[in-house]
Length: 224
Image (tube, rainbow, N blue to C red):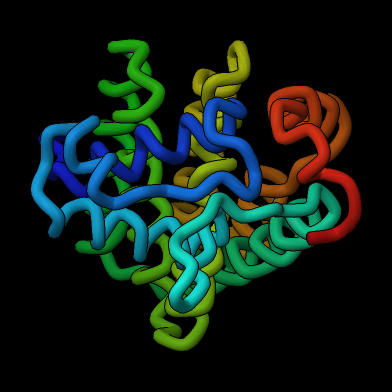
């Protein structure tokens, strides 16, 4: 998958922020970003808008653009809500998906498998995003799909980060296979449960997640 300049710039800035190379409160200079990444102003403006939507960046009128302070408690709460929304999408998809939509889910899973085989976590993330979007569409509930998509975009940097944890990509792929199997069988209860657990950060995954975002340091104190 060829990514645009906007996507590449957004991903690079996400990584810098998540890994502490750009600290909370640090000002982002659009002109400097143009020079650093050798892109025009348009990708920089679009990338910043997307980072604002995900909550990683804030824009202060007449002052500039700054790396946001995001609280760990708030992140966990968002993942809890995301898990419930995804579970609902899975339950409805198991009841409502058409044969064409099931075939599309199968193709999306195959693309996830190819990315995992290549060991490319970023590529896997984007194919994973396509897999989840296909489930949203198969739920045949436009309002639910819109709400899930918006929250998923806010959590994108952290979902990408999770995939860098050892063995998470392989485990995620296995979970995808189980989710697709439940949807294909029309097992709404299983699809809901598996999707909820797929997204929810708990047990060892919670510990891994906390360890992987410690670079935020003081920004993780409090609830954001």
